[in-house]
Image (cartoon, rainbow, N blue to C red):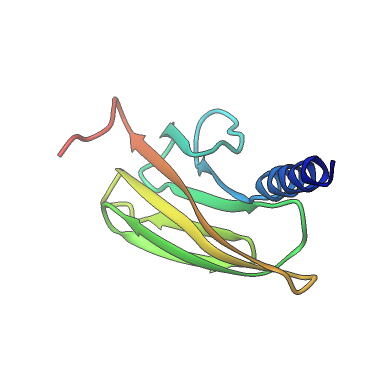
Length: 132
């Protein structure tokens, strides 16, 4: 009987841990239609040659700090504050993509979590994406 209780407790602990995992979501800013957060991929046509891909960590606890890793195609700049990262493209690159990954999160309650949660965003201005 003790074996069943221990196995049930381990199963409950494992399932509750996996349900607490935070995920990275993204959306494209500067679009002609409203966008909503999605994981792990977002894509849209933009209404100008300057666009942004915004990433956020969706967690069920307040966040104190996130370690982000990111990269992009085209030219632009990154800005990461709090639970969000933003890649803003420059006007000379009207299409491209960006990826942001949260690798570690420190929660406000002092607990932390190692992650490998990523999201990938693709944007294009005009008739379609530029394929290189």
